[in-house]
Image (cartoon, rainbow, N blue to C red):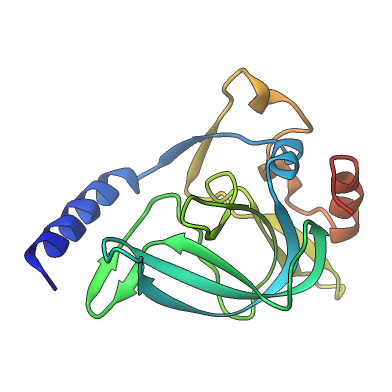
Length: 185
């Protein structure tokens, strides 16, 4: 690895170390996530791989998702969700707003295309809802906003039924019904 890349990665890691303490991001409503996402899918995570971007400057983790259902947009047999960061050949890049997925995890994700053409999770991770099994055999949604400090901006972000953190405990059917109001299927 070249000296420039090593220096860049070390600099990014030092910066990320400061940011990781608590990322402060605007709270997005479910309506905003729905309207500003090109693709919303209920899917199962198949696996991941880490690779450098085309210019060899940044690491990206590419997660393979198998759609169970497409709620908005068009998804093929597999959706690749790419988030910045990862570990490859002894080099680690940490990015505070990067969303992580686990193999086998069942999720509902709100996605947009970034300038590189990658699908990314909308809203600094607020666009990932995990389906968690319940004692009665059902499934409930869990918002993955743990390390984020969500703040009201007083503008459009205050609209809608509250932030996605208010969705904890919702059923998938309830979410589907709400999403249909804002452009889902």
